[in-house]
Length: 120
View 1: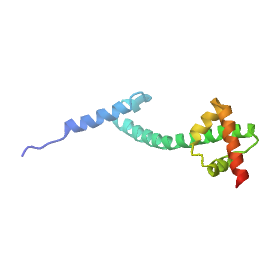
View 2: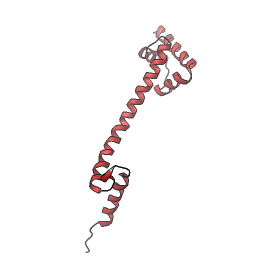
View 3: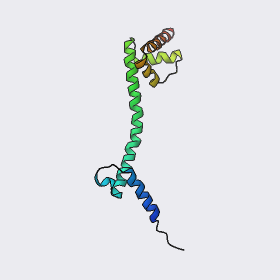
View 4: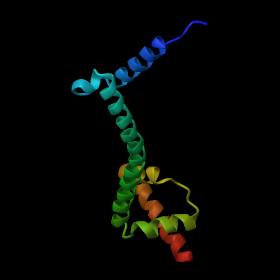
C-alpha cells in the first residue's frame, strides 16, 4: 500500500490558520507557528469577550433603569420588586429603552410598581 504523507491536509490547515491571522502585526500574520499561537490566544479572548459583553450590557441597562427610577422618586431594587409583585414580565433591556425613549410609559410603570408595593 502507498504511503500517505498528508501534505494536502497540512497545507489546508495552515492556510486556514494564516487566513484567520490576516491583519495581525508582523510575523504573526505570515509565519504559521506564530500565527497559530496568536489565533489560539485570540480565540480565548473572543470567548471571554462574549461573556463580558453580556455582563456589560446588563450593567448598562440597570444603570439606565436606576436613573429613570430616581426621576420618579424610587430606587432600582424597590422598582424591580414592585414590578414582580405587579406581575409585569419585561426584561431589563426593554425597560431601559422605555426609560430613555418613552418617559411617560416608564412613569406609568413606576406608578404600577408603587401601587403593587402599597398593596403588599
